[in-house]
Image: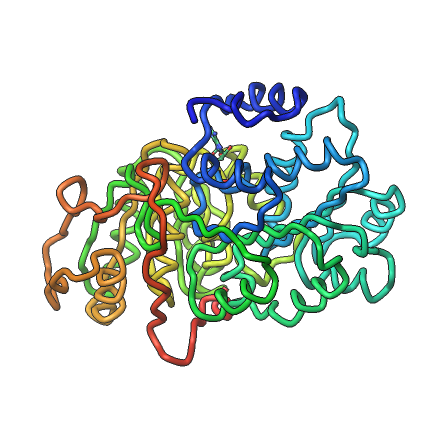
Length: 412
Ligand code: AMP
């Protein structure tokens, strides 16, 4: 599909797409939109940065415009993602249609949300915990909400929202349309899909285990004691906004404070901050008031901040697939970006697991190396995802480091 005209979308939506500068559907959009417009359930596997939001947003908005009695619910794992998704959906809705919306996320004022709910919104975006709170208070009624989107479902399950999702879905009509997206497709996701979707069409874009193609990746081996000094060098060598990933909440605070002390413009974001503080950190980063955001994996998925030029993995992630989500914060929508990984001798096994995930079937990297190693163009992930090369079918499932499951959510 060369442009959006062939989808027979409502004129208001075509106008909104033009305003957003979306002229050509991305591969996930080209696959998901026609299916969803016919009313099919969709099980989509796509990384963030591929245009996933509009892939479900365009059919969702079409339905709300064409069927005045329809209502939609979008569930996301984090408050930041919910905020961002609602922003894009509101842009797709545009002005003339007057579809009311509500953002139901934890940490936000109940009063404001109750006000939005009294206005009978036809589009609700939120996180599972807060939506359940509203269901319990009976301040929201989903019995006529006939369009459901589950975004980043694997992340929602990782964060322990499985039971909450089940409760929410029970309040919705069974003859609804459901679109479910997930970066990975482990067994628990497939089971959930079988439970919540009716005869879904499966689609996938790129490999679920490959990084976006325009990210230049660099690997630097060093002893633990030299990490901070190296980080400072990297920050000084680079222009533009930088996200630095660390393992723990405490580590994020400590590193940001240390950088500020050394005259770097930095702030920390992690799961212990109140919603308002998190919003402020992200806004300051968006507005370029802070050049450096030190983050735990809570910020690794979903956030769409167009100007992140560099990702530095100060600590490796707890689960290998989070590496792909982390570096996916840069090179969004076809832009270029760079990702650097600082690797200490203790990281050997973690790095090999990441390498295995990104280069299935290849020989593992050497156990130790002292010189910096680069793997830019000559050592790219094999099946680039992002905007290149749509591919049907699914890649491998996630491979946690330990069999006990992922601990990324805990660490954030
Ligand atoms: P997402 O994967 O939904 O987070 O989208 C990643 C980025 O791609 C966002 O900045 C979107 O605004 C942008 N985007 C989505 N669809 C298109 C499109 N068809 N053309 C150009 N940019 C797009």
